[in-house]
Length: 272
Image 1 (cartoon, rainbow, N blue to C red):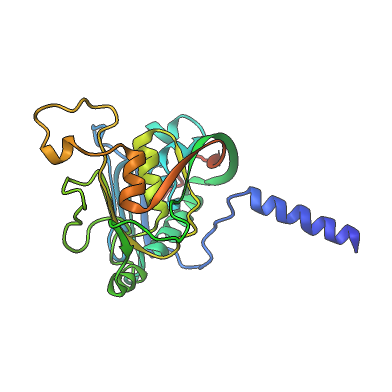
Image 2 (image 1 turned 90 degrees about the horizontal axis):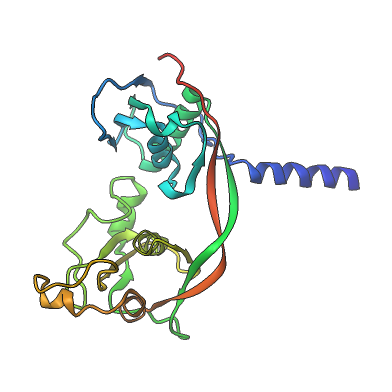
């Protein structure tokens, strides 16, 4: 029995180490084309409709980031060509499907055509931890639960998780938002702050569900000039704004654990 339990523990560890996010559904795109791009451009595009995926002149790294929801700075490893060689991808489902289902189908497509194998790795690095600022859990004036109709729209896959629906969100500061979210997770606040600060921000608020939020703070690297609107020039620092506008706080954590996705295996795509 002990040997069986050890075997199960080893199997579980191996499963956790591998990305192991093979789509749970057997659904695949009804038709899919993956071809080397002949576009002589450095730009690329990638988009989903209700029943299809279209990418033009996109590197495999961008396709992975979209399909698996991986941030560019968290995707590492693999041969150089995954970031330089470009592809045109057109894939069509047999019916309209939620966005998350299409992403799982895109994962399967990349695994089948490119032999893609991904693993995960936790790395220790300096970070900020984002927590609730008030003991009573009360949030700031610029964050609120998303309306039920938006939640339904997200479940159907018809609404972006960040931005894009409803009237523009207004900041209590009266200034233009630095960034905002509608029908978004609180984790997306941490993601936006991570990009702007250039350092990892880990969400430890425990807040679940979907939220509408807006945050506006002083530019981090650009000098404030007379050309700025008065409302923009008088904005607080990011650390003050997070507390006052969102009711959250950032605490320095020199030993934050960050998850990276590693390209373990990838080869040139198989023929269509």
